[in-house]
Image (cartoon, rainbow, N blue to C red):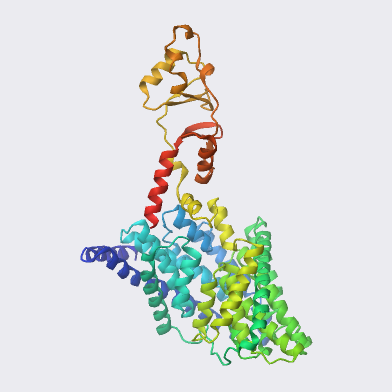
Length: 587
C-alpha cells in the first residue's frame, strides 16, 4: 500500500511541474481534505458499528456492558504495546511541538494508529472524545502527504493544519470551525497564505462526511427557540459559570490523569481504570462513550433516558433529584475522561468538554425555571453551554462559537454564543493564563507560547548553533604551546580544558596579545592568563536563555558545556542570523 501511495505521489509530483507553487498547494489541500475527511468518516463509522453491536444487549445485560470500557482499554493497550511498541503522543500540544521542533514531520504510523485505538477505546464505552485522535490523524496525513510531494517546511506546516481542519470539519460537518480550530489551537503564527488551503481542505472534509455519514452519526440540532434579549443576564451568568467549570475540568483532569499514570504496572493501571469506569457507569450510564446521544436526549428534553439504567434510578424521582443527578454527571465527566486516557485508552478532551457544557447549560436553565418560575429555553442554554466549556477548556472562542452555530444550522444564537464564550475564556484565562494544551506545549518547548519572539526562538535547536572550531588548550600549557594554538586557530577565543575535557576557563586573544610575546613571561602558564567565562550554556538551555545571557554578559561568544564537559561555543551573530531566517520562513 505504501508503494502504491509513493507511485501516486510520484505521478502527482510530475503533474506539479505544470502548476505554480500556490496552485499545487491548493491541489494538495484537496487531497489532504479527502484523506483526512475519509479518515474521520472511517473512525465515526467504526465507533458507530461497535456501539450498535453493544446496544444489542438488553437492560438485564447492563452489568455486563459496564465492563466493556475495561475490555476496550485493555485491547487498546495490547495493540499499542505489541504493534507500535511506543508511547502515543496525544493532544494538540504534541502536534504544535512537531511543527516547532520536528519540521512539521509526524510519523506515518500516526495516519492510522489513532483511528484504530480511539475507535476501540470509545466504541467499547471509554468516556472520552474522538476529535483529538481525528486531529492527530489528519495532521499526520497532511504532514506525510507534504513529505511525499517534497514540499517545503512552510507548505508542510500548512498541509498539516489542513489535515486537522478537515478532521474537525468532517466530525461535525462544520468547515468554519475546522479552519478556526487549526488557527487558534495549532498555528500560533499564521500567514495569510494558509487561509485558502485551510478553507478548501475543511470544506472538502465536511462535504465528504455529509455525503457518506448519516444524520444519526453526526452531532446536529434543530434550533426551535430564537434568541430572546431579555435572557441576556442569564447568559452572562452562564458564561461565568462555564469559566469556573472549565477550570475545574482542567484541574480535575490533570489530577486524576497523573494519579493513574503514577501506577507503575501497565496492566494494574488498566484494571483499576476499567473497574473505576464500571463503578461510575453503573451509577451514571451517560458517562459511557462520547455521550453525544445523551446530549441529543437533553435537546429533546428527555431526561429519563439518561438515568433509567442507573442503579439509583428508583431514587431519582423528583425534579430536584434529576438536577442533582445531572449536576453530578457534569462533575464526574472530567474524572471519567481522565481515567479512560490515564489508564491507557486513546481519546481527547474536545468531546468531554462539549458533553459537560451541554449538561451544565441544561441544569442551569432548568434550575432557574424551577426556582424563579421563568420560561427560558433549556435547549438553547445547553447549546450555548457547549460553546462556553469548549472556549474555557481550549481557549479557542471562535472555534466554539462557530462550531455550535454550524451544528445548529444557523446563526440564531450567535449573540449568546459570543457572550458566553468570551466570558468563559476571560474567567478561565484570569485564573490560569494558559489552557491545558498550552501549558503542556510550554513545558515541551521550555518557552512561552504567548510571545511571538520567544515562540520563534523556541523553534531553533540550540545544538545546531554550536560551533566546534575553537582551539582547546590545557591549564599547564606554556606560552610556546599557546602561541602554536593561536597560529593554528582562525578564532580569537580559546577554551581551557583539563584532562577530563571539562571547561575550566577561557582565553581571549585581545587580553594576552602583548604578554605572549614578552621575554619576561617565559614561565607564564595558560592557567595564569585564563579567566572564567562571564556565563556559559548547557545543552538543556533553550535559545531564550542564551539570548538573555548574551545581553547580561555583553559577550559575543558563550561556551556550551554538557555536565561540565566542554562542547563548543555559540555566537550571538549566528543566533540572530538564524532568528532572522526563521522570521522570513514563517512570513
